[in-house]
Image 1 (cartoon, one colour):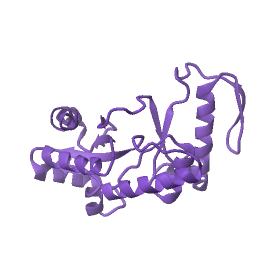
Image 2 (cartoon, one colour):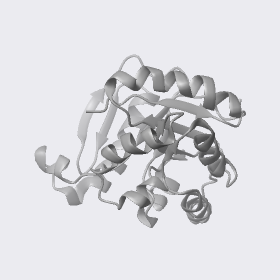
Image 3 (tube, helix red, strand yellow):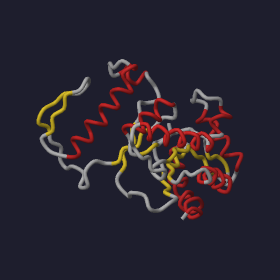
Length: 227
């Protein structure tokens, strides 16, 4: 089992520098079934949930009457000091991009190539215009699965074991990951920077006992290149 430990890399300064919550409808519909929820409701529940969170973060004594959530006179403490947190929405389909343009403050897809990120940003800008919202290109990032080792073959073998569990063909997943030597991983991250991506979550796919060394490797070999 690989622990959910990751490192973040913000390449371009000048962002809002506020706390961010990333949300999505979930990758596996079976998660909904296990909770007694119809998977077809995932997107609408998430959209309504975003509205609920924004209201609760903004003021005390909040009431809400929606299709899925109803409550009266609810207050949460502590609330964010600067009001609503920024909400970044995941997904890469046209529906997900429309959802982001309408409800989100930023876009946070997983498992996209640099070309897919660039294409998605173009669509997101267009959808934003349709909804009368301006999409800040700096408020977007990608999640990249990584396995870094000075021995390229070892990195490929470790990552290969992890990627067996994904529905996409392994070669397609590799194209969306940073796997190999530090130099190769820097080159992969740079390929996203070249198409306008400025923020990243680097998610190590290594055995648990290698997580800390992997994070240290990020700090010593990867992040300084983009500092």
